[in-house]
Length: 557
Image (cartoon, rainbow, N blue to C red; front, top):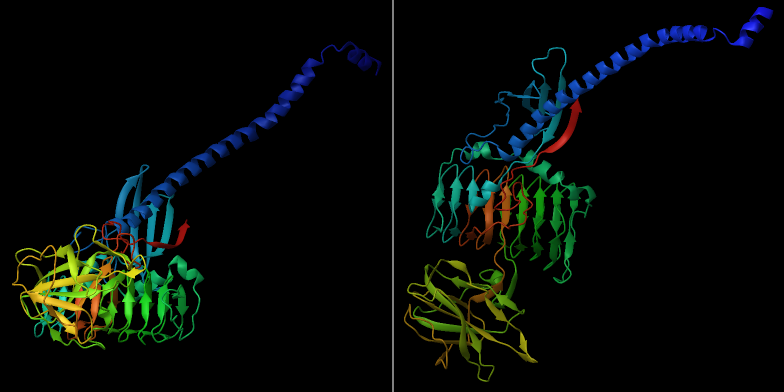
């Protein structure tokens, strides 16, 4: 004890035992530290490997999604594009190398749920013991923008009945029949197109497109017979609606305006002289769609049914009628009383309904021919008389060609500004025409008309002056509009489409099992709106993007 105290007191030799103790403890720590470092290095390598595999496998999924949206097969426009699998066709796997790993990607069509596809991407492939698999389930609407290229499209036959007029191409997988005096104007008939069957969508695809829209998440049920407002200035807002049965719009003379998609699991019916403004949205019915007589559908927008579509309305009337007769009433219920003798300079005096710029001139004709059109100012005096010529259409050697029914012509430049009043006094204008045949229609309705002989195709005088003749027991069938006709897409996905007698339509119609235009119908292809149309592929005529897939599930293994 005394010896130990002496050693400690002198502190001699204490460094050695302490060094030995630390050496022993360090020996114990070296092995686990090296083991930890080795484990961490291996884990880092595994993470890097898995990340590179995941990036490669995910790139395979993205490659398929890109092909679906931008490089999808089309027998006419993209014959070398990517083909989707069907019930009878399985495309070969897509293989490429990324991050020094071979990637194998396959897409397959699923039986349930309908219209669903599975993408399986494996990297590296073949599996050497270390691989990452990404599985993605998706669905997507077909890109149907190609339907906008024709006024009428059907997988089967197209029948154009007596005196009906189509402006635009007509495309059919079957026959195209033109009955008495029916014409395809400014378009060509494309018969027996064998590609239509393979390109045609299914009802499930359209159902998914409209049900998957974000605005449907807040959809309400309007009940089976919602009533439309009687005041066009305060229309009934329609949509987003989801109704699990038949839906019938009621309210004689009512006015509705879409504020979202209207989705009906049964049949949709609109009648009783109502007006529905699609407002860029869509009406979709899993059953049939019936648009009754005297109903007006304003565009742009889409009307789509899985079943048959029947309409007897005037569709596509848009913008504002500034001046002239109400063309939706002509023939039904107001009959045409006859036509004006050709070679006559005729004028009708109108007070504008609304102030605005008249950008299109509408004239109703009882048959084919050529016309010239003009707008004159009014002298504001009593008796009234036309004065200065404000604008003309077709004031050249041959005029413009017309067919039976309403004919629409755009006014070049900025159009013709019109006002309702000057001070407190009503303002009037005269709509004028000249024709090479007895084709310009009139109705038995008292108004202020003037006319004189003018051999066609003589030029309109700069100032009308005093005209010797009146025709005040009739009204010539003229009207002036602001804005053009807006595009409407009407489609029967699995049924047929019938346009009833005397219907007027602007846009495209399509039906799988045949299209019938009845007597005196007028169907005119117009431009697709540049911003959007609530229809698969309807994001604008100049948009090169295809259908955007909807990702349902995405798993990594």
